Image: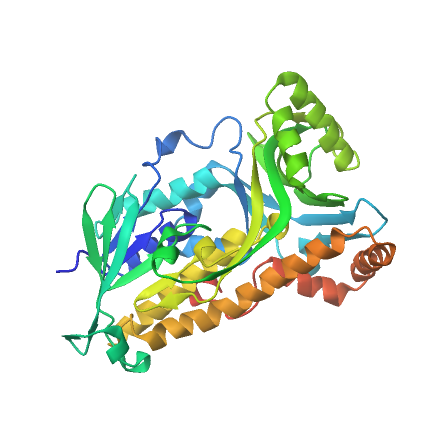
Length: 432
């Protein structure tokens, strides 16, 4: 007997959101999560901010609102930003976006990842049909093959004829097993499930690493996100609201691996953090005055990955397991949330009309709806990195002209803002 309708490997933001979407539709869901159970949830949202944050689009916020996640999150700590400023620190090009240009209150919200996970956990705890296994790691994955109710070998059945792909059987590191007709890989960029399923991945080392930290600034950010393209990579100041004040920002500094290691080392001592604050202020051209670093400054390599396919028999990949991209546009978590919403939409619709959610045609629809949009974003990020990472005079002239030129073209700016809001492509119903 199946333990659940679906096993989701990975309990991060994307995996938890998918579990909630399916759980609310009365699916039996098992989450296999390598992370420990969340800390005392109600104590989160106080003191200094978390190091890892996400910039949520309007589409993602609508999804979280529909799932009744947003109210608790907003009652703790989120920071709306109504403007964006992007400029080339090596030249004169600059572009500014404002929410008023498209008649909305904000362009997005900066949310601390641990708070977002806590909000999702609170909702999932209220669903008795969701089983969440913490500190559980996948050690093997096999699929018991059936077609039309009879066990067969894969080579004996044409893929288009498979209507029932059997059951996924996963074994955990404590020896337990779980069975379900469907399985989802939401287990990160180095997805073990993706590897066990034999799904190849295109991988590109960007030659950069991202340093993250939290700072206090002398000048309030005014609900504006700022990003400067430096010679070694983009530096982002993401606005935070701490105890009602706008003098905190989350930093994402993408640079060379060697420089990232140096910045991380600065974050280990009081003297080093003072120097790091000076360099951050200089990198932002002094626009927020003096900068005080209030936390450590870890870094991580930036590698873009894209799975060659998102689906297999009764299996789907979502989030970073399917694609991971450069953080310069802050779109990673939003793409993953759209993956989860589209996959849930296709599966729930299939079940309502009496179809098998594991039918290869259902899974193919999910892949068609998401892979092309994600591929376009990956290509755009690669293009931006190459354009702004070049010191060739001709490319420097083009990018400065481009930023300043687009800044004067309101129709183009409005289109870019709509994309930043997540309002493009084949949006799932709960995100519209």
